[in-house]
Length: 278
Image 1 (cartoon, rainbow, N blue to C red):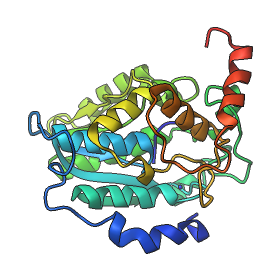
Image 2: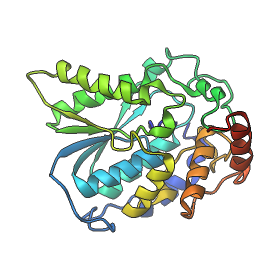
Image 3: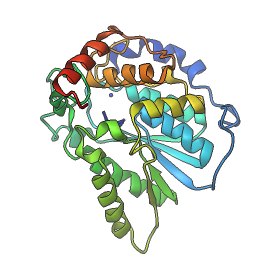
Image 4: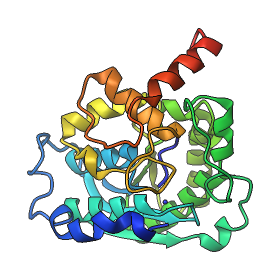
């Protein structure tokens, strides 16, 4: 799934109690992690859902640029656990965090398992059934708002964590969309601001992002990927399968507790049987 930015309910039973220790700010958020070298001090806003991809991106920007702000979106998704992890990420890195309320818009973006009452599909993340998780024009709407916020905050770049694994299903995570959106924003803000669109993971796999996160010291246990909002990751939805598979491919320990930690193998076998070249 693209990694953007899901009902708190009883699912947050442990987050609330652990907030003081999990989200305690650090005096120097970058010095606390293995990668301490910074590149040019480009003031950057990160669109952060609280998932593995966008949290890794936030840590990468904090290490290599000047992280100014995290922005998340509540579009009426079926649960909001990810947003709590985004908040904790911002606190951990010592930056501002806004959650933009798009619930009124989200109610009109029907037909997705993420906004309607339909069951979340299980299986491999590249299966056609995952099309049920597409929210129409979601990234275009969110990024347009993010660029507007970036201009008011005098930010030089907006960073988003779409990656190669998203290309199968999500058209607003593919390179042509990124290129077209960057061009559109250039003209939309022409004469007022020059804001770059940074997508460093665009041609990388989920496994590549896990490797980068490990290099940066990202606390993977403090990220949320599952489309279902249970106490633990379900292990069976497309994003859980993708997450579990990525850790396996890298050989990096996966600290994530799953209700079904081995289902990803069955899902992968079934997908490869139908798509040998996959």
